[in-house]
Image 1 (tube, rainbow, N blue to C red):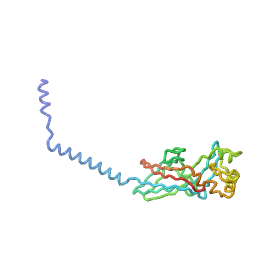
Image 2: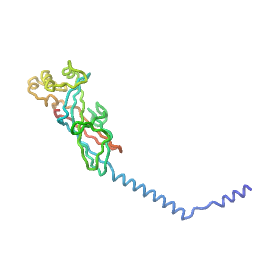
Image 3: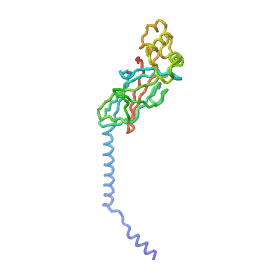
Image 4: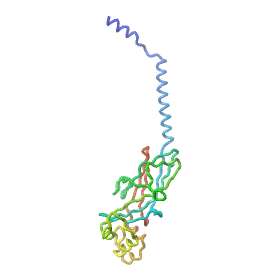
Length: 231
């Protein structure tokens, strides 16, 4: 009885026909075409973001020195973001590296920064950029100063607070015949030098700074500056 049942089961099996094979091939071709369509659409909306940074002091942000265990120079920068692609993109993160030759290799590693608008108001992320759109923001970068300069400028000052008088900072540097990074300057040259020379002379460039932004789709754009300009 079991043998007859097995024979009946076997008799119900059907060899695939040409029609079955053609139907399967048609399904495979349709799936492949759909994948190509999605891939092409993704390429058409490929993100293209460019960034530029420059030392710039707007009217609402000023460079300053903040005292602490290590004094820091706080300098403003202007950031230009340009969406050169053909679709909107969303910026979800902005970071800075101080002292490295590329993003992620600095003294300050991938520290999130705050973007400021034209009037100094904080810009919240995420930030949307339409296709072919550009926007300008500002940010502040912190440069650690040498121990000798920290002692010179911060003696008797409140910790964690910016020094209120930039002219007084310049006078102290002139009297000590040093620049902001502790380089010795000839006394006569120091007294004749203006703030631009004492704050950022060519012989003591600030460490290079890199700013990198990331998008919601994982895109990245970065720029690097070696700042010689006075704050």
